[in-house]
Image (cartoon, rainbow, N blue to C red; front, side):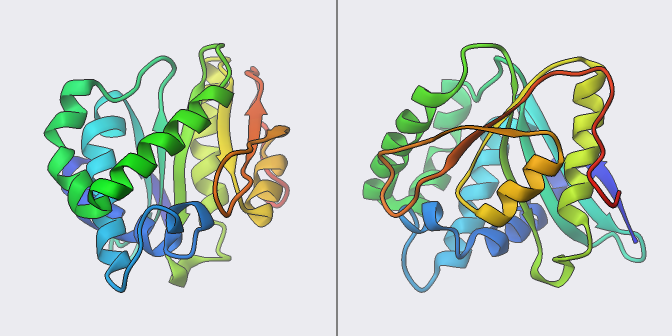
Length: 209
């Protein structure tokens, strides 16, 4: 059993490690972070992302195992019209450089520019990252993380946007009310789908939950 709770700054190291383990085989991340120490560098990258962005201007939700509080999964959300400020990004710049290197930082900036061109202009929540630890996969953790935040967003009648390069994940998002908008071109080794979920009054609960 597990419970969905907001993450705190004290949770950053553990949450970042869980996300790193979930994304170690991701096709998009593989274009940015290379090498034998990829897991460590990804952990640093997610920690810097949380410190510079979502913990300040969005939401980070975690799934905690009830028996011991171990974090099994996490989701990073950006609130409408709230993104990391330049000052916050500059504070975390050393962390980004350690994770990506200078060349990787340039590649990441180009990737973000490609993704940004496809984002809707309408104010929306943005699911930046979601991942589940290997030991908890198949236990409904990802679905529970989505349901928990989408219920809150539905109460505000606001839409949600995300990108997904994994067909299995896209099926999960469709069960939660997302529809495919387009395929995003211009990214090496990946063709992520842009997906949108309209704002609504009543939450859509995934089948089986």
